[in-house]
Length: 590
Image (tube, rainbow, N blue to C red; front, side):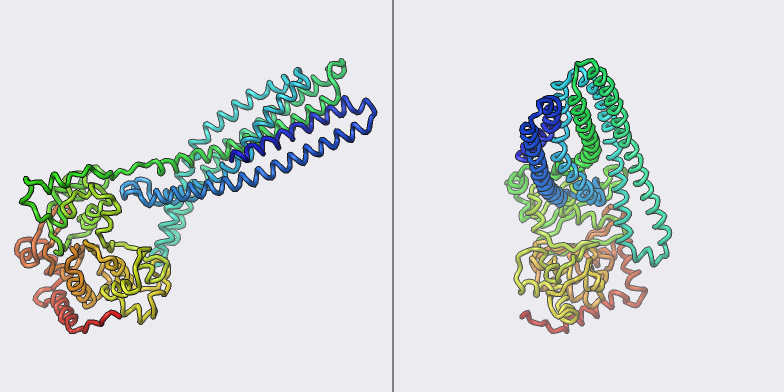
């Protein structure tokens, strides 16, 4: 950028020399009648023109490269920072806003970086240099032209000050626009199935109209600059010509100087117009830059707390607590909105290494929230969460996440191969991938449907059924042999037999893995070592299946509704599935 500025500076100076040389030829060289001097000075004008053209072309090419490279780095840093934002920070910014910041806001920065390098040096030099040269030619006429500049400067600064907040509002409207488009594209099948196309189109029209109206208002405000400059500078030019005519008539000035003044006026006018356009681009860039900077400077709100593990767990005063629990919640309370009713209230439980915890409850009772807190997607408002005896806040984030294998309630299949979706960039050989698919009961359908793990999947796994997606996701969670495996409603699309085979396989091959199952089916958690029953964020039952049937009316009601009255229902089907799974011969891994 610095080298480009130097080249641009030299090229601009050459531009300023051309009218000065022309005035000198008209007023001083032509009256001598020597053609040789005219040709010599004419050649000098050509040299200046060539140097000006070459300098500007080279500098502009360098400016484009700098703008592209800088935007690439900014966009990369912004994406990287976004990936490390906590869930709370992501919720605060909103995903559509983050998408908008990485696309339209970085584009505005790219435009500003290029424009500032191309005009940020050239336009001010032409403006200031043109004024300075006119003072050397005729100070009186220069003062007439200079009188218009304070008004021009005031208009430019005033309009730019008004436009920056307006562009910030425009970008916020763009965020809402992106949010609506993102939701409608993702849910287009639901919209069509419910015949809500006209309804969503009307919503889009409303948001689109808001964006257009804001753009129009911004454009109208910025449009004040150009006409104002034209009027003021043309009035200045009229004054220069009138004063110059009187001075030439009185012998105080010369015709060449008036010609040079009109040329410098054109240069100054173009410089002012370029500056006004630059202010328009800068107004957008400042608004966009502030939005990008909000993300880049966003601190890690999940700091690693001081290591107190040895004092609180390993000391003699706490020796009775050894061995430490694999997962422990101690009077945990949490709210997403940090106001009103808490999503989790005063929750406490402990499970040891290798045990299974089942979590069940109505929709919105806080089941997935427990998973988020366990993995420190959010920090608890009150209480403490420990993994392997340590406060989760004492773990570096990447070390804590390495302990978990997780299948979220609404998980994602990426546009990649089956093997790529299982490994997700982790170093795994083909044997590990095949084992993970086998344990997830996905090996059979992978061989039957695709014939190979390298078969490409569509976006969100559109070419897989719901059950097949879930088995690939479970294989992804099992592939790294995690210390803690979380299955958040991950078997809802599986048939009873496959679900039973899956749970049996996990018990056999992952005996040291602590298992957390969030489920709607009683059959999925009835054999768990511990079952946690939630209602409105509060624990209302904790124990084994048989105990909860006697002690927790809500759990017993869920079990009765799913089993049926006197028919065995789901429980009977589950038992049959388990017996069928026992009869299935285990296929050895090749």
